Image (cartoon, rainbow, N blue to C red; front, side, top):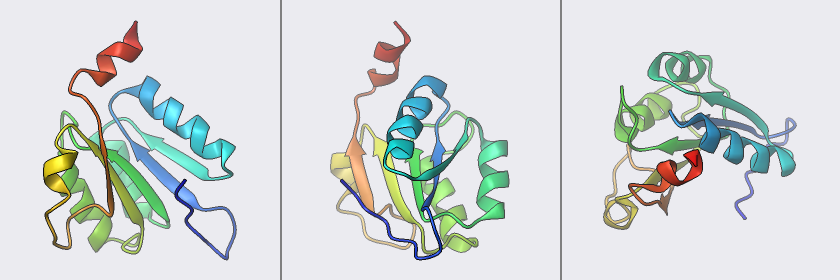
Length: 121
């Protein structure tokens, strides 16, 4: 389990996903680990929260309808949460792991293209 230390109190985490049920599942698990979790369902709310900053961890889905993961990573890396640890959930995680630049995630989680549809049933 990933541990992000914050001497100022509970670690703040941002979960960005258009699949609300998946974001809520991730949120519940992070809250169980004592993270202070905020969620965003779309680009507008994600952008507002990224601009507000102060996050220690961000969990993003690469395939968002309005914005892709690398653009969101760039916004986080250039904003006030620039030191945040970023986890990108993607069906392409195995190919993205080799990329190294300032707009790459710190960790990747492989998910299937159809994974969100399973949770809807």
